[in-house]
Length: 401
Image (cartoon, rainbow, N blue to C red; front, side, top):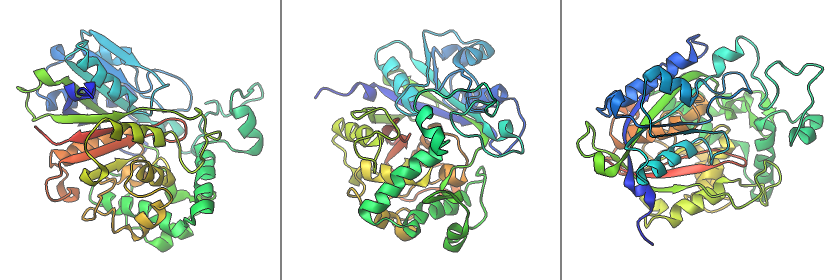
């Protein structure tokens, strides 16, 4: 196979805004903080940014799900663009970054600003978390569901918590997975978040604390669900040929995974114990000579803890059905374990920044800037993966060149 096109791209800068619960700042303000930080981190000027992309772009829907669109950021920063895109229907949130890799590889741009911003915590105010897919007004008398919601709402399956719980329950049934095993993911996230000054939840959590938490949708409890927050993340994807003179040594994009070979559905997948991430993971390994054994750090989506377990299996870090024993006790996935996992606390404790937060943390680790949570031994290969249900995308990164 000729060199995959994504290897013509690299990551040259990263940035994040303030991150917190209900911080009350304008979402565009947060977005611009992250974007400007990423541009400066790469040693670039705004005049050198000629591409921009985001997930999901400007849209309505659940309150706070998106903080800004492409055109708002382009106008605010006065960027002169050769290429831009933003869309909801992508292979997970990282599809926007994959698009940026393809744009620079094809010569459509030299330096692409990629961003993702949320303000879900502030948007929800002091009330309860909104159900995904429900109208922002809370479902008045004129609301009529469409699509899959026509079939799920009568059964009170309002949100992804219910839909992912079905997959988790099936995995428990087929492979004997237990809540005590699944707890390893949440407890590991909390331990790592304690070392991350930007994490939302940093207080210690025990297995007893986890098991005593209220159930949300069996078998998922409160601590299996990610934490809404406000914040923005940005990064610069550059064409390899123009990255050599920038401030940082670039991080290479070794391979991407974007495939979906099953039905694009939460509940009609051919194997309910996995999701679209199965196909994305397989595609990524088809595009590289590296193997799971080469990975030093894994930053895997944890909108719900079971999604992380499914990614571990899909990416070949353990055999299918063995995710439970793999994470049990947390030894293998600890910072000093065989596969350090979600080193910043992920979304379960760090905060729901979507897939961009995982890619940002992968870069932090490869640049050796993790502080107290830095993985030892100078990690050289990292994987970042995002999405669940009918969406999934992943990137395999190699250390600074």
